[in-house]
Image (tube, rainbow, N blue to C red):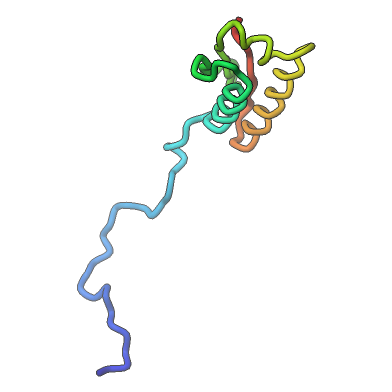
Length: 109
């Protein structure tokens, strides 16, 4: 037996046209993290989590997440003096900043 390690690349040419890259920038959904955060929080707060729908739109260079929910859950999502929706906006800004986008939340009535 020889003490040399076998050369597995021997006889193969390195003519691959593919780059070794995992999850390139083109595969990401803009605002995906912010949307996931909003969906998670709103479904947790709502009495009817299956009725919650988050619509992602872009306007003026900003991601806007529009939350649709059952009429009975609107008060829970907005909160007293709008404190719950303000907290969701802060979370959404932070999640958007992690992706490098500006994001905000609106609740559809």
